[in-house]
Image (cartoon, rainbow, N blue to C red; front, top):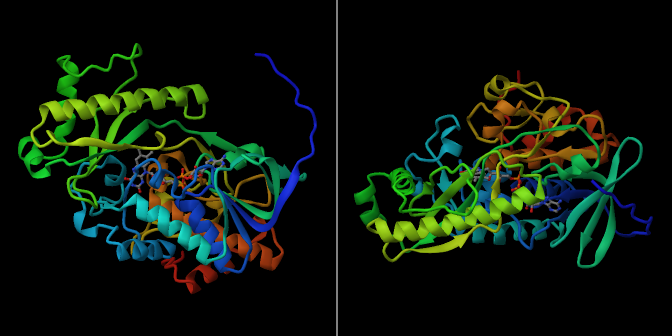
Length: 425
Ligand SMILES: Cc1cc2nc3c(=O)[nH]c(=O)nc-3n(C[C@H](O)[C@H](O)[C@H](O)COP(=O)(O)OP(=O)(O)OC[C@H]3O[C@@H](n4cnc5c(N)ncnc54)[C@H](O)[C@@H]3O)c2cc1C
């Protein structure tokens, strides 16, 4: 390996805010709204030109119920546009959410409406948004994060913040700050949508949407469907997450998976984009040729980038076990994603160890890796975002770092603001 040493340089400070939210997925949006609602100046940085993260850009467009706290607000907004299709819950076939309490399935929503409403939610609360901006470094003193270094078309710039919330999904800020985390590897998946499928006809032929897997597996086995890219990634047959999504004739397809890819390695991640997109095209064409009902279908859209389930998860003050999260009776519960269900998280899951000035939210929070399959689901990401946003505001009001915040104060504020935290221990 060879190295270069970059020269020291002067970097302009372009903003000085109370709360800097890094990442604009479900977690970041919830965190920004919550901090702003509680009277703080908030800047949200996002590398793309839209909000929603995996839940829009990666075409993950099905969620368990959004029914508590800020999630209920989001559901209301989507419902106004007929874009939260509780009447179109697919039956079975979703390995991501079937894990969740064996509950009645998932709800499709329209990602374009979500992108629009997320921006409106932030602007209504006076949150400043900076799109097309990448977080590439942090400002720190000996003990605390004090802001971030960003890069965008304007060059390299700095932002000062009293509290930073890491909602990057990959815990980029935590990593840059040198705080502890672990890396977990999960399959990488490219989601794509097909349109103009005659779903009644297809189902008559397939039985259930799971029948698509057999079609693809058989095609690959008998050589009619080739994935000859000169490499041999392990390939999982596609699933269908939701038949007849918000729009009739639309299918959201899980386009195969690459296993054991290192999602933090840029070359591997590039390979994943190339391979999975190639697979998506081959599969869509194969379905058109072979499955009744797909004759007039087309590959409407592949996701902006491959879906990354997990990379870094932060080592927080608490790393609750699967059993504890499922029992959900922490003395310091600050996130209960689903009304009436036990699943809950303690305050320590959003407070990183070893550094101040930083909170985390979303799919990189702290818990035992065994339970992360449930904790990366959308409603959990926003519930932790909401808790982190309110916590940030309370830390500033009370002149304490996140590690010094009294969780009962956070619980009281969340409850006053409409979050049902259930029963404490
Ligand atoms: C294939 C697949 C299927 C899934 N299926 C379901 C499902 O059916 N239901 C469900 O509930 N969940 C599902 N999930 C999980 C769920 O989609 C995610 O865990 C959740 O959306 C994560 O939200 P988040 O806000 O924590 O992170 P993300 O959505 O990853 O958001 C992080 C944001 O930060 C931005 N960002 C990252 N790094 C930087 C940086 N350095 N600088 C600037 N911006 C940055 C990103 O662009 C992104 O907008 C699935 C996930 C995958 C991959």
